[in-house]
Image (cartoon, rainbow, N blue to C red; front, side, top):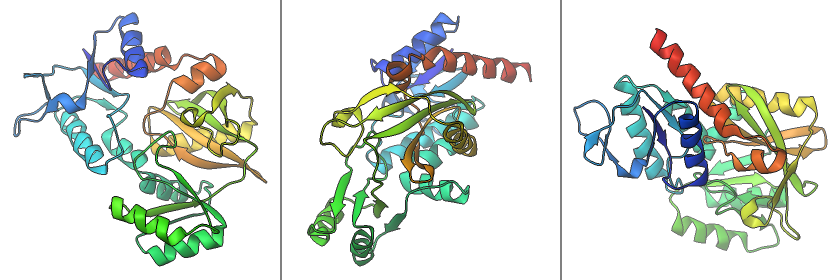
Amino acid sequence: MIAVVGQPGAWSTERLADALRAAGAEALVVDLAACALRLPEPGVWHEGRRLDAEAVVVKKIGDTAGGWTVRERLHILRHWEASGVPVWSAPNRLEVAVDRYRMTVELVRAGLPVPETVITEDVHEAVASVERFGTAVLKPLFTSKGRGMVRLDSALDVRRILESHRAENADPFYLQRFVKHPGRDLGVAVLDGRCLGAYWRIAGDGQWMTTVLSGGRYAPADPPAEALALAERAARHFGLLFTGVDLIEVDDGFTVLEVSAFGGFRGLLDGCGVDAAPRLADAVLARCRTASAR
C-alpha cells in the first residue's frame, strides 16, 4: 500500500491517489492531522491502527500558515521514515523548501539568482529596507499561492504596517524587492530533476500578483532553454522528487522566486495540457521497485 499524504477530497491529492491505483497499486489518502505517534513504537497510527505502508508520497501536509503545524507534521514523516518506510520527498528536503526563509538562504548558497531580500526581526532595519527598495513585498514564511503577501511602498506608513504585522506574527520580517514584471511569471514543473513542462501565470487586470487566487490565469509557455536549466538546477539542489520552480523575468534573464516543497498539478494541466499525476505515480512506483530489490 502507498500512503498518499494530503488532504482527503482535495483535487490534486485524489488525482495522485487515482493515478497510483490506475498503475496497479493500492493507495490510501492519509491526512496527517488524523495521525498519531505512539512512542516508543515505530510507525504512524491512523484512525486507531498502525498504517502498513510500503512507501509514502507527500502531496500536501495541510495548512502550512503556522510554522508549528509544519514542524509537527514533518516530525510524523521523520518517524515514519525512521521506522523503515521510504518517504518521498524526504522530510529533511521538504523542511528546507517549505520555510521561505530557509528556502531563500539555500538558493543563495547554491549560487542561484534571487531578488534582493532582507530578513530581520529589527523593525528599523525593515523600514530602511523598504525605503531602499522603493517597493517591497512582505511575505509570510509558511504560505503559498500569494496568501498573506503585502506590497509596501515607501510612500506608505511602513512602520505602522510592520508594527501591526509584528503584533500578529511571531516570525521575522521577510521583505523582498518588488520585481517589475511584464504582467506574468513562469512556473516550471520538475520531476526527479527533469522538466515536465512550463506555464505562464498571467496577472489579472490591475493586479500585481499573478496567482489564480488574485485573478490570474495559466497559459502555455515556451521559455528559453536557460530558464528551464535554471529551474532544473534549483530543483536538483533541493533534492525534491516533484516540485514547481517559480521564475520571473528580469533585464538580463530570469531570477528564482521560489522552489515549492509540494509542486502543484493545476498550472501544468491547465497551462500546457500535461498531467503530472500519472508521471509522479510512475516515478514513485519505480522507486518502490528499486527499494524492494535492495
